[in-house]
Length: 236
Length: 236
Image (cartoon, rainbow over all chains, first blue to last red; front, side, top):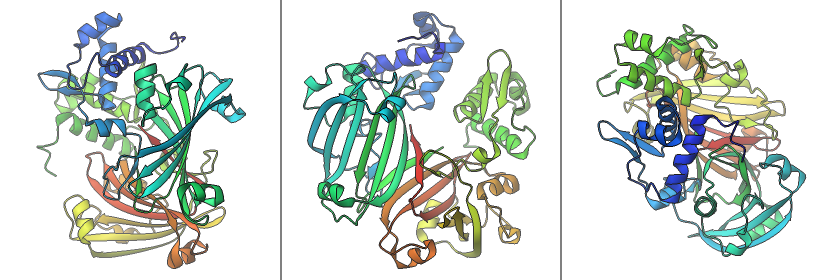
């Protein structure tokens, strides 16, 4: 990857996130001092500070007055399902169960080539059905460039949470997602998948996921019924 | 307000935001240096730096290498409708037109008292109907504590954008909103308001808006039809 256009502090952020993602800096561990970070990455202490401030703003590390900066402790479920925003109306998370999945490699469609990083020729399409305690609830299609995720087909069955796989197996950390939401009727095909009537209301989400370098690395569209659940978001 | 429990850098942030909101520091203007900010607010340069970093992370100011820190330039519409997330599918904003509004003062309900800052006794309830080019589309009910917004009833008719009023008349800047989204059917009453059939799918949003001091200052619920529009959000 060409790093020449990436600001120095973004490179430091990316390096630190890789260490956190790889487990070299586990949750709760102390980050090196800004002076040490500067030495290790060959940047000024000001640049190191800017990188650490950004990690703090993203909730990845936390400064403790007079003690140092620490990798954030999160319960595994909170960390794993940070981008899974469907919750009980009171905010409680029900862990979604993976029912089945289908993977295939196919040429990227024009809109996928336009949106994904490096305009990929081929993509892996991952179609999954998920259940909540009330039964099958979420139909999900994820599309990623083959070039970014070599050997993905051989990793079947994929784990429940794809972003953890992207992080652990490919060093790609999803930090941001842009979503377009639509309230519409299920229609015949989706109703059959979700076990509802074609005229029932469903939520459709189209997501573009961005990594630590702000590259669009995945397109995902998912459909679900909201009865008994809500979709929680923060605007800022 | 009791500021003793508010960290120093939050007080600096609040002070700077007030200057920006009041027009003393207009968009594009240069912020005082961290040294000057430290002097003016009686805090260390490190605290001033932390405040400015936070403003930068929120997109309110922008550092320009070797030049200084500047209040962000935004087009008026982008700034005004930053929290209005309903857009054309391609992301284009259609400015919503205010059709009518009704204001009344009433005792806060138990859930409102529990959620709003300072557990208010009385609230102002603002009910509004908004139109997009396709006709009446959005039904909106906003609830704010009377104590935070004295004289709000006398300001009728309120401007199109309430957050601008909160900022300009009361110095209260909405910086974050937590939302719970639901895809459901309109039902008879809402269908009559939105000009659709009772069985048509609509999006229901329940929002809690937070100010610069992270106080819950407004509860808002709005209902709209998505046909021809999408709701755009960012997860991070």
